[in-house]
Image (cartoon, rainbow, N blue to C red; front, side, top):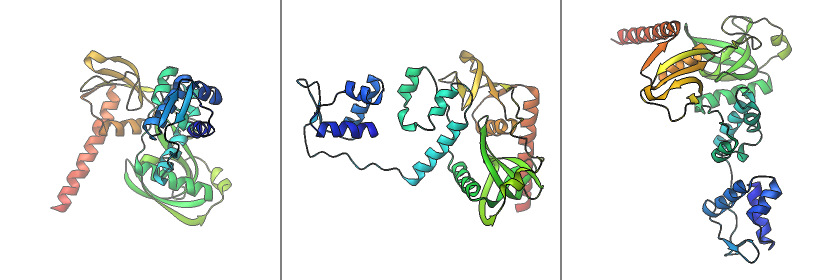
Amino acid sequence: MHRIRWFDSQIREGKYPSSTQLAQQFEISKRQAQRDIEYLTYSLSAPLLYVAKYRGYCYENKTYALPLLYMTDEEKKVLKYLAYRYRQYNYDNAASVNRVAHLLERFSEEETEELGQRLPIFETNPQLIHVFERLSYAISQLLVVRITYRDESGLLQLSIRPLKLMSQYNSDYVIAYCEEADKQRLLRLGSINSVDVTTAKFEPMDAETLEWGAGGTSAGSPQRKPYTAQVKLAQPLASSDSWHGYRIRSSTPEQALYTVEFHEIESFLHHLMVSDWEALLAPRWLREQLDALCTRTLERLGEGGAAKT
């Protein structure tokens, strides 16, 4: 929009700007400059007229004014979350991806293709964004938070002192001191069902000096070498780069067979629970863990049905 406003001001000053001048002014490609002009014409309904004599543009209707553009609070939350995820990204094309945190509006699908690079896709689940927003506020204000957390043993009621948000291997976490365990834990944001920010303050230095406890691993010692899983899908993927954000190491598209990399076992198991696939061929230990997870889920459903009857 900064480029478009400049282009608009040049027209109003009678300077007949062109795509070449726009590209030079903002150090962008001429192709991107032409897309800006097309956006001004088709999306903002500007009555642009190219004047061959001046090799530039003017407005056919001089009463035209750029529409008032604004961003809703929900859109700001989504962009804040995406900027955070892009800053945390440290894998393929990391240098280009990290720029997105500061220049979201400069990137488009076409530009990414020009660079021969692919931006990662991150889930913008409303519940996840809500949890992220509340924890961000609690961290900035040093406030104690009460959460409902889901792990293998079921739902837990925890009081935590959140210290830092982090993202690794397609999952978001909060490093927090857990009052019940009297230790630091690494808690997965996707497993937090509810967040209640209290008015109780805490001292961050006191919480940071406490040792790490069960239920999480130190941020300094994650599993670096990825696990792999061989999955058969119902049909071949349009792209052979990733499967819902998980990197594909190798593939046989004609058979819809893919070897997928993952680092966080719990996150990948939950991904398998909600994704569409035909067969999990390997490894055996992952099949066994998924089978155990499904069995526990069915048992709980059975217990709930029995309790109702």
